[in-house]
Image (cartoon, rainbow, N blue to C red; front, side, top):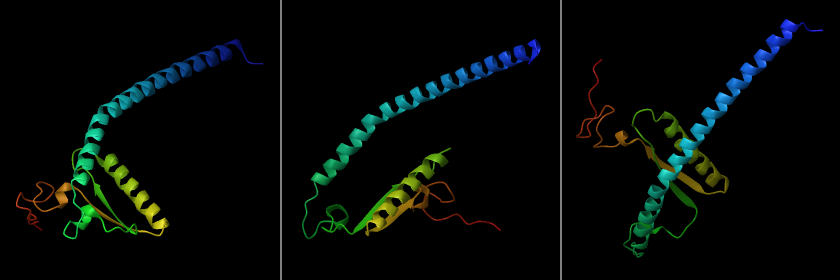
Length: 145
């Protein structure tokens, strides 16, 4: 049989654990609220982006001289995924999530027997981009050895 001192220590340990658990729940609830508010704040941006893309697509006149990238070829065999990531600050998790989603989409298309290609890269990887080892002219900087 446990002694009175051991029982009191056990009770205090359980109460301490309960306090920690309650604090963790409060932190998780605060983070969830913040994430929900961020998602709500991004909704107008997403709606506006959808309307801009819809507007661009509606203005494309499909004819023999129209760009195939915008007008399409009428075939559903080949897909081009354009993946844009960020080169700002602490965006590693953001970038890896975008690349992971694009990879999943490409794998799903290939599983359906379709071709999937991707045009991807950070803005700094393209000519004319500043930073990340490039001059504003788009010419790579010479590295000293």
